[in-house]
Length: 231
Image (cartoon, rainbow, N blue to C red):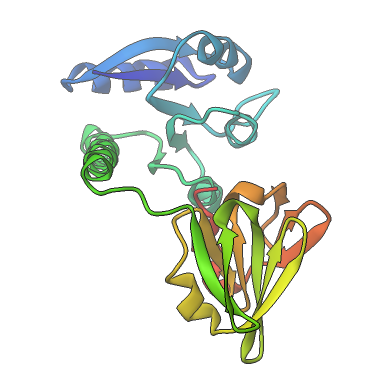
């Protein structure tokens, strides 16, 4: 059973989503709120799997509210305005529904959510079967094989025929291509630019243009924006 929360300042909009939800099996409506402030109190008290969140609300917009959540449930944005579609995409929303929301379109959105949940469950089962990768690699430096722990890597930078591995306490320079080295890394590392790979665990802030690791700014290439959509 998936727990759901509706957040919309329009009563009729909330009632319509409630009506749609009642026609589906496997979804439990925990609460229906008329503001982000009210929703915040619910989220502090109970775990929510799926959030139906209106964007254009007084006091606090739905997108701003969602950005500031520490624990983010899956979200389906609802709005009367097409202009917010990009915002929904950048926040990695399950879907983006335009009002008035038809049941057929609502059903498609919930099916996307179920598909995401099934994929996550399957991945978890696979992880139980497949042994976890080592948390380090060996790199060749000065005729030696040197152990480097993934957790010590901040980011990796391409410099012509070499790469610089920026660690928490030093920098190592080795002859390697960035693409080939990327294949040796685990899922915590993401490509943000043709010349950079970053450790997502070390990111301290980011915008649409760059990522910050402490005081270091690393650019985000146009072709790599999709890689940061799930940060």
